[in-house]
Length: 176
Image (cartoon, helix red, strand yellow):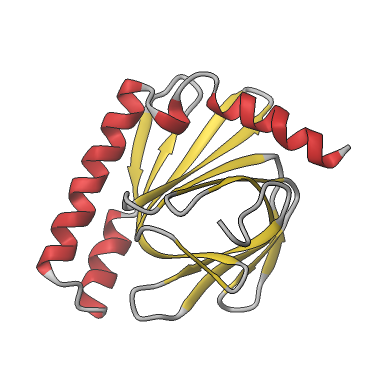
C-alpha cells in the first residue's frame, strides 16, 4: 500500500470520539503494511500528549493495527518478557503519512504470563456520556473487548509466542 512500504517511517495519531487529537507517536517504522493490516516498530520514540506534554518510550515495541478489528496491540519488549498494551479503538485508517484511530479508553494490559487486566472502565463510562457514544458503538466496543480477550487466551495474532520476537528481529535489520 502506498506510504506503508517496509522501512518507511510514519506517525501514529490517536484521536478521541469528538475528533480531538489525543496522542501522537512521532516515528514508527513500517515492517508490513497492507490495506488491512499494519505491523510497525518503534524504540525510544517521542510521544506528544494532547496538552503538549512529551515523553519518550522506554523500550522497543511492535505495533499491530487492523482495518477490521476495533482494537490495536502494542507488544513491548522488556527484560522480564513481553508486555502488551491493547487499546479498544476504531479500525485504523492511513492518511497523510500517519496511522489514525479513535481511542475508546478501554484498555487491556497483558503480562508475560498471558494473564490480563481490563483497564479504564470508569474513563470509558465518563466519555461515553460526555461524547454521546451511540448504543450500537457501545455494543461494537464491548464485543471487541471479548474478541480481544479470546485472541489473548488463544495466543492468536500478535499474542502468538513468536510474533513479537520475529517482528523485532526484522525491525533490527532497519536499524543497523
